[in-house]
Amino acid sequence: MKHVEQQTPHQQRGSGCNDRWICVYAVALSTYSVVTTEMLPVGLMTPIADTLGTSVGVAGLTISVPAILAALFAPIAVLAAGGMDRRRILAALLLLLIIANLTSALAPTIGWLLAARVIVGFCMGGIWAIAGGLATRLVSQRSIGLATAIIFGGVAAASVFGVPIGAAIGDFAGWRAAFGAMAFFSVLVLAVNLWSLPELPVSRSVRLRAFRDQIARHPIQLGLATTFLFVAGHFMAYTFVRPLLQNTSGIGVEWIGVLLFAYGAAGIAGNFLCGLMVSRHTAASLIAIAVALAATISGFALFGDTPMGGTLILVLWGIAYGGVSVGLQSWMMKAAPSAIEVATALFVSIFNISIALGSLAGGQIVDRFGLQTNLLLAAVLPVLGLIFAIAIHRHSMSIASRPAAAPTIIR
Image 1 (cartoon, rainbow, N blue to C red):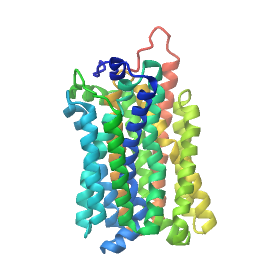
Image 2: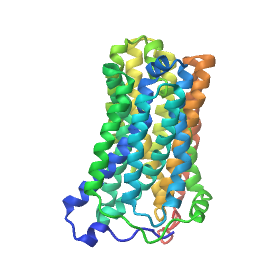
Image 3: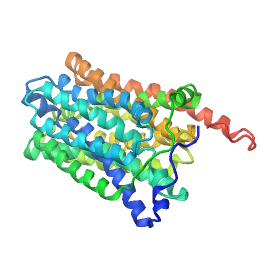
Image 4: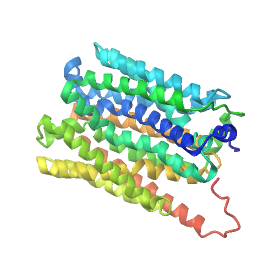
């Protein structure tokens, strides 16, 4: 499939390098704001449930509901965007994100909060899918790799820092203040995008056939299956990290925010470590992630019943999950280098389906069987993911052994 965007708008305007990189960072802020909003309830699950008079399992729907809608909306956004200016689409979605956060902050019941999270789901799918293909629009060819890393770095940073930031604000001023703070931050992000981004029209849109063609390909199927098992297993357990730390490890509420920040720092370290090796050793990185996720999630059930044990395993867990996004996204880009926008939309969809089903299943298991059982069952999924990671490794080795004259196997 040919790339659908026009030439770099900055090249058309003759803008300098500084302008281009300001735009890249603006898009990264957009992905950071929407993913942080999506993850915010994880660190606030217990106070949300207490304030709104519901169970922790039901409160877990604040994660699964937007994730389901994001999964549905990501490919729809790419298909429906057509020739619409990408700058206007991002601005509209950021405005909706502001409204969703304000509604969440003022929600009187769990029903109102879930309604606000529906809006978050639309924003999540649209912003992530559209932003993923903008690097080629904003910088020169030689800088596309770095720009893409920065844009998806917003996703990675939000995944590891969004939860502790929300928990810290929630502990200091209440969970409603955390959503209010995200609304204010989203206003700033919208202003930066409107100020910095040029017009981003497109000449041709992606067609439904492109999605059918990519889904039918074995490398894409392997990537999607691995993504599902890694992410679902993680969120099946991590959605309830606050109750785990308080009830299983016996850690005081005043330390929760600090420990979640430690988890976030460990996640950034894991992202960096994986980034160092993923370009040359993508499959090996995914195998290592599978083993590490299975070990840390099950390890929390076995050795996380003390403050020291829970703290140590949480940090190791952060390192393990920190490499998930960069590792899996790297494989999807390698699997479809000529259809990156389509591959990104599929990746976003399965990623968010995994979050939804993982957190939903975790909530049901926690309510019926308890936190410990949920951890052990969650650890099974990355073990299954290891099988697919090994299949990716074998696929990569088979391609590497083929003659150099046939380099277009993965397209």
